[in-house]
Amino acid sequence: MVLIEEPELFLPPQTQRFLYRLFRRLAAAGNQILYSTHSPSFLNVARLHELVLTEHDPNVGTRLLQPEPLHTDEEFRAYSEFDAARSELFLARAAILVEGQTERLALPFVFHALGYDPDQERISIIECGGKPNIPLIARVAAAVGVPFIAVHDRDARKERKPIQAEQRLNQLIGQIAGDHRIELTPDFEGVAGLKGHTHKPARAWRSFADLKAEDIPEPLARIATMAVTLARR
Image 1 (cartoon, rainbow, N blue to C red):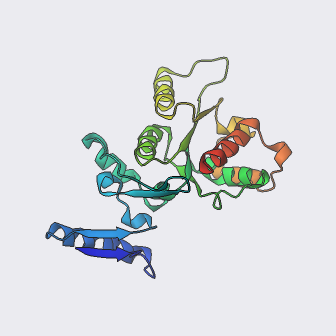
Image 2: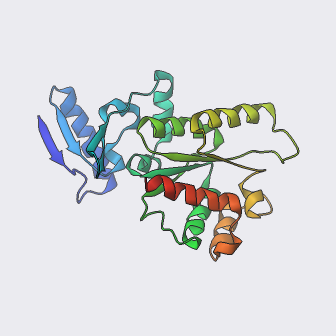
Image 3: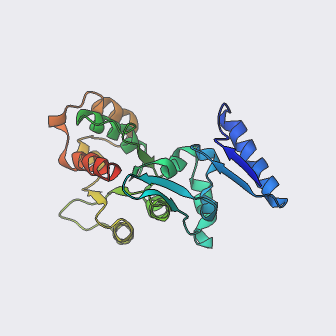
């Protein structure tokens, strides 16, 4: 049996990944490897059943959560989608799951305009690589016990119904996220007042950089305040 505390210390990301593979080879040879970590490099979403997440509750002490493995059909997809940035989800007090880079770059300015620091609150804004990936990443968040908010576009104006494929996807996200879902009508750009469809991340970043609290659209303010509430539970 090998016990290691924080194996990532003083190691660059590339060496952390190499060391993780070395641990797996040692385990395959019949050794038991136990380590504590705060590095996404040592947290494998395709092997959720090998993780034990700890949380200290001042009322009941330390609690342990060992998630169930993903369904076989989802293992490879999850492995291919979870890079180091998305694996930060495992170490968050709360997460906001968004469709793309535009939301990921803009939302930190919303937090700061409201007087919150998402990093201090240990809130991760996870860019999911498109709306179709939100259900998968939401299921992972639920499996590891990280409270999350799913933020996605309705992809239709209020007076119109989304196309059938979007309706099904919106309903699926709603089933997984429940009350912790914010649907933006017609989309993030429309709510944020961003016009045009080119260079959206750059335009959002510039537009939100000097954001004041009184100028924040209500749905975006609700995202930030809901996330802070979840993180402080």
